[in-house]
Amino acid sequence: EVQLVESGGGLVQPGGSLRLSCAASGFTFSSYWMSWVRQAPGKGLEWVANIKQDGSEKYYVDSVKGRFTISRDNAKNSLYLQMNSLRAEDTAVYYCASFLYSSKDYWGQGTLVTVSS
Amino acid sequence: DIQMTQSPSAMSASVGDRVTITCRASQGISNYLAWFQQKPGKVPKRLIYAASSLQSGVPSRFSGSGSGTEFTLTISSLQPEDFATYYCLQHNSYPPTFGGGTKVEIK
Image (cartoon, rainbow over all chains, first blue to last red; front, side):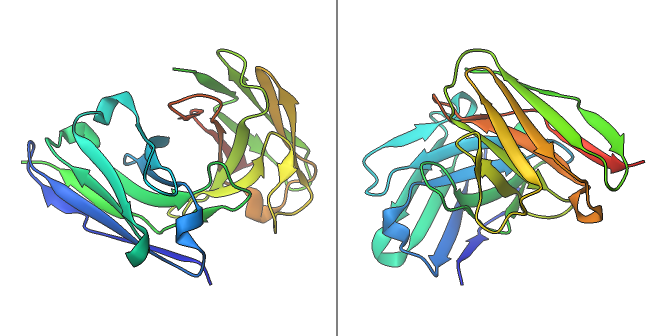
């Protein structure tokens, strides 16, 4: 069974940092592009970042460039999102997912990040 | 960035109705278009990829069509479990962008 399990969300003050993790199992993690997608409360979906299978290519939405860093450790079947200089508008459920460049569609359950003082 | 405009933003329909949702891209995206379904409190689920390919396990009442700038998602006969919000996504160029969503409610 494919599983993507996110962790690391929580409440953080504006300007603070968080590191999200996503543990993958049930599929060959190293063979897939991986993405982070977020959804602000009551709002639509927003793609945040993705990373190629070997980590050699990374892409970000403009609103997080220079603040967020996506990375992966294929030996640990894990995806990460380091989030710095957090803002109120970063408040959202963050999903780990793999659906780009693939016929497969894998999503985690999401982890809530709340940026508030 | 490519803007994806979905219409309608919300609609009411009855079980058995044929439902069509449209997504327009601000520039040509070939067939790099996917459709997702999301139920309240649940994880998004892809229904269609490459504009018209049915995701494995998705009922055949769902279909997608289009190329270039205009795309449609059709539900041939709406079922009770299909009441949800639907999103299109383009991934022809970075950043991938979602449409604003179409909420399908029970009439």
